[in-house]
Length: 318
Image (tube, rainbow, N blue to C red; front, side, top):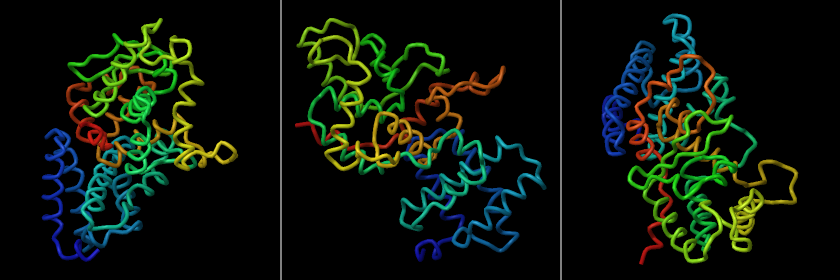
């Protein structure tokens, strides 16, 4: 807290903007954040409160102000608190604060955020734990499965259905098979994921598979089934104490869907816009005319690459 108390709000926000640019966020997204943060700091200034003094009660007052005095719609309210969460996340990363107080506030008071993006009981790994997990996997197929889950947040059935020709190496993207659950079918991956995928495909091509599927069974040489994918994850999670198959508590289990929870949570915590995260998740659209029809996918890709956590996979190169 001392580091925060010794700095002005303007200096902190300026450093936040610099950090956003270092992460290669688009100017449009940065300006959107700044617009929301400016209104927040002006509201706090009237109350003689600076960033170091903001509490849960101050967030409540700001939420009330947005809804009652400014008449802001729920969707825009979420954008305000997404910007604040990104700012607080920056201050935590820089050691100015110990906790991001905006995250639990969003879960409690922005109900749709909680319903869509949070499962309070499902296990959530830290970035360091996820790095430990994927780097503990020596089998090239299983490592590629784990990293692809973490970097894309796709469902088990979607991963199972991927064919080799679904991958666009020039764009670092995958076009998923159409399903009832998914709207957007294009997901992106980063260079770490590309590294482990290419490593696995090199091995795959040497064992004469009988399918075009990306992931195959070593025994049948056919497309890997759902149980095979599940086992490819849980056996390593169990070794690290992340998965307890004997427990009845959901929070003691780590399976394929936990990667989707990790993907969503860490993109949001690193400041990715909520509508971009929803697009990459492929969440079903509920309106006839939807904002997602107007998203610039090149911009979504740039934001994704700036926000998706790195897992230290290049340590494997020699």
